Length: 471
Image (cartoon, rainbow, N blue to C red):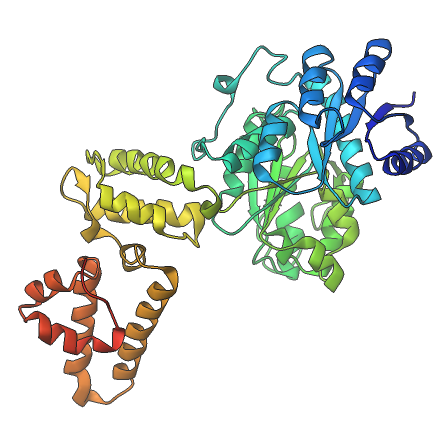
């Protein structure tokens, strides 16, 4: 039976093009141009999906979305918008939209998004999503490392996890290193029908061609030189559950071919065995690479990409989650307090400012490590600036000035180190000055006092760094 799609767009030409394209692809399509007409047609017939332009002459897509979700909750909604805006995306998805598509429209993207929306509806009906189960956020099962943030990016991330977790979709997780992609994968697993089955993580970043087949599929004893025992591969370990393949973009083209065959056939053989093993594994893969660009360059297989890309989630960088930094920091502090048997109550206002000002290139992983380190160095009940690492202590300065200071100071130290032993004392002096400056957040008055020299002498020794007067 054909799926019924309602197109809502006040640009008649676009509506007709979409209608023709979707009809050609097997859908039963109706077109309307106003919000008022939408309400009228929905009273008379039901649609599986509504594809709605955000801006209409008499209303907007948000109002139509609200009306549909209140009166026809089984109908999926995809919003078309002329600009990309994460706040708008969060708002629409929170209101119940499956997704939103940014103009200009591309046929493959439209068809892919529509098919995903319809398939997700079917999966959610069979597995029961959170709302149908009478649940809410309190029913959501976090992995131990997952932290619920309050930023728009975190709200959108959580909504996407909730949406895809109950389905059987293969998921691609994208995002910078350290953003917590494995944690997201675990959270998807814990909220799926496979939650009581194994979650197996595999790092593909350093996988060589020689080891790939053995790591993926296992081997029998004596299958090759050095195979002194039978090894169960990651696919077999994860059977019935979820296999998480991290850094998938680093796999060689040859290994990608091996992986594609297993994914397509849903069967594997251990090396040295003729027995086929049936696979029932959900795949979640992660990358910090742009796989579309890798396909264009010929380094990643397009057919493998489409096998994986049933649903994609972008895990945002910490710099795009400003409202979450202190939440995450408090969480990590509570964890390390238990680990170290300490009772540190929190952070000074100055430390909070530094945490918020820093750009966190290592993302959540870097934040976690920093909190663990400064908690270990803290003896009192509050973390103060003197235990902060150099890069955070400088974060009150504009970034360009931070980089300049660090670069110049390090360059001078390198110059000193490149000289002969007659300059060893000078090297030790510069090293001591740098360590003290780091400890006091580049406050030269405090540094001079600790170094037991006057301020003018300290200025002369570090004049090449061009540090301004203390505030």
